[in-house]
Image (cartoon, rainbow, N blue to C red; front, side):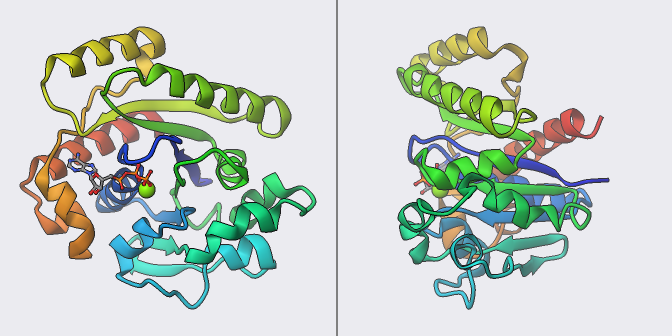
Length: 251
Ligand SMILES: Nc1ncnc2c1ncn2[C@@H]1O[C@H](COP(=O)(O)OP(=O)(O)OP(=O)(O)O)[C@@H](O)[C@H]1O
Ligand SMILES: [Mg+2]
């Protein structure tokens, strides 16, 4: 079976993109799936969380900009990573003059379609050429949200990008899921959830990732949430999310 490619994106910062990429990726691996995680953010949070390495020998930048092969490092059983580097901050400029620049990541990943069950891409908090590369390469877009006031305006922007990508370069791209992270039971949260459910219907995952200290500590531990504290609410919530993903994506 060909790998299902999922981009986790939201141009709003700090909504749980990277935490979700790491936790969903490692959770799927625990369920026996072969997973490739791709770090597309110059902040390197995903790479550092999984490898503790700040200065990888080769990074996604080299592949996107210098036409080098995709660097893949093994993280654990069933989990591989394409690391990012600080240089990636320059990619928007360096890629601007390249021909067919939106499709570079797609052609790099095509070669690995048979090697993995899931390819999960963590995006930077912006909607430039790098995020567009992720969307062009993907089957599904997953949007993590925090249930703060007024996220709808930001979502409209993402909707526009999805529409544009579908129209121009990747008609197969689907909005796969919207899910809440850093959730607690305050009244505001509930109102926002209702608003989002009215707009996105069954695209909204049932599982909500609660605000959880173990998830906040996890990046510094160098372990996945399942190794760091498998009894935490964070581990339970992400495993429930993984089960929902498997139900929807592996029908
Ligand atoms: N459910 C949670 N409970 C508590 N802390 C969380 C939770 N999810 C994420 N965090 C913490 O919140 C911060 C932001 O999360 P994360 O880095 O995953 O967001 P992001 O969307 O990738 O951010 P950026 O836009 O900067 O890439 C991190 O410090 C992370 O450890
Ligand atoms: Mg991030």
